[in-house]
Length: 622
Image (cartoon, rainbow, N blue to C red; front, side, top):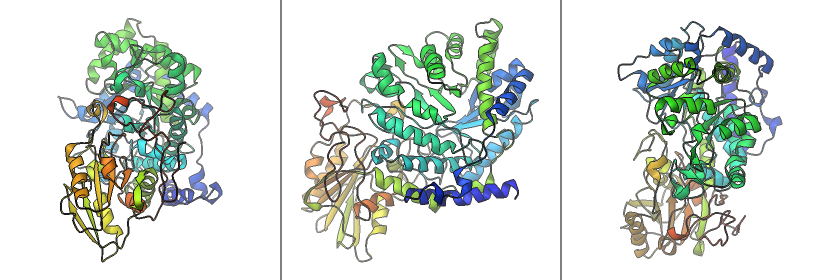
């Protein structure tokens, strides 16, 4: 069998294997090709690394440590030929950085074009290309979009997290890209933080369980497979514990709590073989992590035995005290192996050469960093398979992949209230009136990190809104009506209001007030005035302050950010599936109660960590 045929076979069976796994089949049920792949010998890989490093010039070594956003190769007087000129070892696409035509085939062609230039260098070292595929291949139009991690944490189902990561890997590989900057295993302690939804929940337990599963899904049984991509566990460390929930702020936990809460999740992820770790923007006790030698080298590489690549975050070095030259010196000596520049790469390369020439950065540190980078490239088989496996491209956004995303959405929902059995909805009701700004808005449903860094509004990609899913779920004679503000509901059998946060990402989502908007409260109030049962769905990246929306709703569901598959939501609303989700965060009564976390004393949130009702009985607390 030719290699290409084997890869095609692997692609065809992969989605089927995932569905079998999620329906309770054991490993014996899975095709052999999916269960394992040939693993390269570590000794062989290490020998190849040593041989290649011995042949490299200083310029070639510095190039391997340099990561550039592709958009900066094509503007500001730069050229894609700089990949060859400066021996650039890695490219990335930040949010919204994409080819002119946002479709999978264009991404693959773009990647192959860059790779072709890299392979024209003297030593023919391939690039490794990274992207924030944090809930599916979320930058690519038509890709499958999964719920954000906060919802996946509510599922308490690591096999589902692994399956979502495995499908994401297939879709990322289908565009040629090798590396996802995921999973985020932050442990958010304050919901005011704009990245709360990127973590699996407020406990280290969830970070440990789900982070490991995600790494296993992305990287598979072997990195040396056309269906595997490199995982990047982030952000090391303490990003979820900043004072006041300020993004990129200071985490002031003592050493014992810092380790127990913010480092614990990295241990199983590293044992699972995570090939890269991203340094965090935040500080610990006033010291920025990008320059923290104790944590990056002594703890991460030494104590935890991490032998992969430490990559900086976007312009992360710039936040260190001092000028840019001293920032580079501090970060590289602290243990950063690859620098996400991502713009002024010529300045970075010039200063690196100066610092090495002045012996402020040793050649031993450079050779260590370059060896780590090359080992990953050898382990991934990039030297043997540098170009896109086109048989994977056609699978992006496939029905098989979307069926798993639909399952993820179903299992992430948490039922917080269900008075008078308002749920499940009847498919044969005479009329269901739907309201709320989020009911028919795919961009709001997917949240941040979708097509753009900050997300978007409306039909930003391919998917099914909750309103459309309701229409698809009911019997032919059931009428479904809609108004954004909840008016026009009189005479309906029941009302469904879909409200919540507009998309955001990172510091743009930091909030001092998590109250629902007046627009959202009015939609619920108008529906309630119609004198019908009201079911409210809250689509948000964190627990929000519900106020009187809770009392005016007969049933209330935390839907989080469910992704592209609205049918996953309606599968549960109409009772085809039961609620399984349990809160991954304590739900505060009001802003005065934030931060509130399991283990606090006193501890009296509106809904405790682990809470979640079902159609048969309340689950109680975990």
